[in-house]
Length: 292
Length: 268
Ligand SMILES: Nc1ncnc2c1ncn2[C@@H]1O[C@H](COP(=O)(O)OP(=O)(O)OP(=O)(O)O)[C@@H](O)[C@H]1O
Ligand SMILES: [Mg+2]
Image (cartoon, rainbow over all chains, first blue to last red):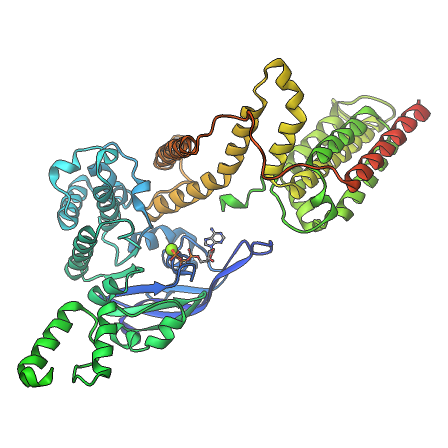
């Protein structure tokens, strides 16, 4: 369904430090078509080229060869439009808290919207709405970003990009270094944001549990190449191939897999603890003690 | 990208020049500079060219990298040549237009100067291409160690230099990253009026300073945790040791020096 896709790549290739002994092709002939209104996980072993690929989507890196198409148009066709591309495709880097610089959190979040040329009233609305969605209280908005806790800084930095209301929001490992509770909360908020704005969110993550729970589709990178781009369930069915490239399926999926092998009639495609619990309970109710 | 700036960058390949003792290389490059600047005949330049070519052959550094080291100074080179051409009034006048006058002497001097600068740059880049920054500071520390007698803090200086060198790539990388992050939020860095451009630097400079201070603090803590207390009694992982090839190299350099002295005497 071509009409639904918003972002495409054609033979996208990128080589770092071309022509030196440090030469490294980080993205190798990637062809992709990403649809509107979706929550997409991006996984891959460390160094597989995820971050490099993401930086092409908003024109921060220029492809060595190949194209990036936004709404069917090459983003590099007209360099003057590149800035608009960046407003339409928001990118949150890993450890984004290191980019905070304003006197107050409010001002920092409004940096992006201000660059878009919005009026003060619009900016205010955006900032307050975003702060609410990401869970920053109004009292925090008045503080200096350097006086926040690590988790709060992270949320402020993410809000800075969300406030531009990009059609595609890319988050590069937004949960790195957060505690489990903080991770869950942040991911849930990102999910809510996605539903509310009907945008596309790309979530780069090393946690299979997280992508299993929150994303519908998965983009898998392996050694600079696109391994596959498919529904989350379909990807996790390829257990062997995933472990061969240093990835694993969520732990609970492994448990279910073992149970199935032992002869329990459990359905396939179970990747979250909740689903597993429900399935086991259903099985128990159906078969009673005899099933066990 | 910022990182592509060659800061006299190390070029890691295998070669005789790479394996030579950095202390000798520093002394030899100083001799080379003396040779270049002590004479003013073209024979000296020819000698310098032979020296540089010899070093290049031994260094396994591709010509492309040599060209890359000269490219940034081309504007300076052109300016020097132009000034020499216009303002040296010596010998036959070849061309005159109002007050502008080009003389035979002007042409010779500007050519001479250009070649001299190019040789100087190639020579010193060969040093930095073939010697890692850490080895370079080790060598400087070792060469300056006699100054310890007059209470000059040689070790501290060398430590500061190696820390600075160590963090240049890190900070450049960080600058790159912060610039990308702010660009992703629509920051424009390269157009507008001067005042806008200066303002545009704020979103980059502030995070950069914050992170530089954070790094400095972390490093200081880490050094204290490992009981760093200066150079007194400290042993080294890499001991600089001169070998046959270093002495041979030195003798060759002395021969070049002797040749240049001879040339200077003969020309007079
Ligand atoms: N600025 C750079 N210069 C040179 N090489 C780079 C640069 N950035 C990344 N690379 C190389 O490109 C490859 C892909 O890096 P990338 O950062 O895209 O991986 P990643 O999938 O995001 O890894 P991680 O999960 O660790 O974040 C790596 O081998 C890396 O060493
Ligand atoms: Mg990455």
